[in-house]
Length: 542
Image 1 (cartoon, helix red, strand yellow):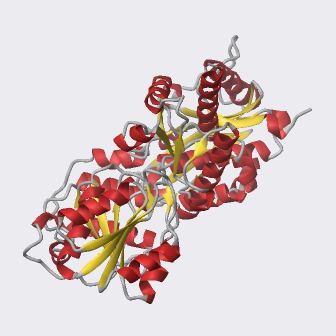
Image 2: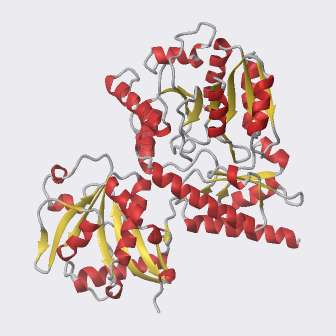
Image 3: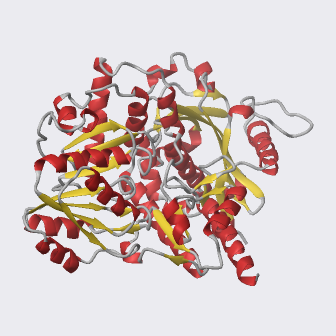
């Protein structure tokens, strides 16, 4: 009996999978559709095999469907249609889909839908903004239903007529949204190296973002760069509902120094909240600038209590600002922006936030926030090296007692580019934000995170952050005394699972941390969790 639970969609990686691909290729494009000459071995190896990526459907150990992706020009369609690009919408990254084939007894539409859904997942991750394919004329209606658009002349010969078609990111976004049941059976190893990156930074970076970084650098004064720079800033502001943003060449510590510099010259007294390592760092930023402030500290791993915050605010006379970490990276606690906004708005206090680990991982609304820091290399999926400060007001230009490099007023007065800016970093960031699918990203991340947390709890691991105050992207685990975090981290390193454990604050507390800021398949995470569980069971038995 054929059951859906036995069906899996994935990228071909195993030798036996490729052997079946060549056989199915022969049955389809030699025996069924006479495009190639028969041979004694009944095997057809595609001429572009070395350049193809194969997306396949398995029923147990049997290959029942496949398609091939290739992004190297010239395409096969380049050889069949003169001036191919004149038929297509503008694109920066295009790929061709070929060799779509499904075993006859499985041609009920479900396998095709699953393969195309996997294609949409794969295309989104790779950053393709156009997919082209030749569809059999008999299947035109079905392809249109899935979002493909016909173009150009009909190709082929009697008995094998094909219509060229294309699909845009908007179309495969809709396909992904419509196919949630099939998506649950998709196993897409987006991390194709041996190592599985579960670090909070740097995260896995898509090929399209990598390609932008590899382009030749351009002058930061050129009109085209300035236009693209402004567009990047607009994309960032739209992502988090902020009016303005300044980009700085450096890490999140630099953007927090820029915030501290603003607070040091404009206001009387403030309050810094801390419930983890990065709250402590805000205290250090403020201290180093000689700012007049009080601190409100709670136990690491505990969320803030609104009553206690209000009490601390009342104790600080003439308070002008409040500074807190939104997502406390060290513990995985997600502090409540809504509560902080409410406290500050009622008392006309300026709210400042460290959003380094929350931008790109949850829906974020920075309206009403005075200053907020972020970075390029975590939830946004770009290269580390850029930081940013979001704001919603006019900043005093060129304050003389602030160092030039962190003077936000100087940035604002210079159109955001007072100094040399790396075009490679900017264009990589632009591509990552331009392709950012908020609704899909946040929903998928929340589901993955909930599932991983539940699996960890059932395996007996203690997660530090309470469920209703937990970041979906960061899971900090407090290990028992008999299990050493550094030793466990080294074992996972050797197995190819990269987790966070080397930071001094983690080693000191015997914690490890799993980050879900990248893109992961259920299969990859299942393998990791199973390995982690086996290690724990061995230690308990010992």
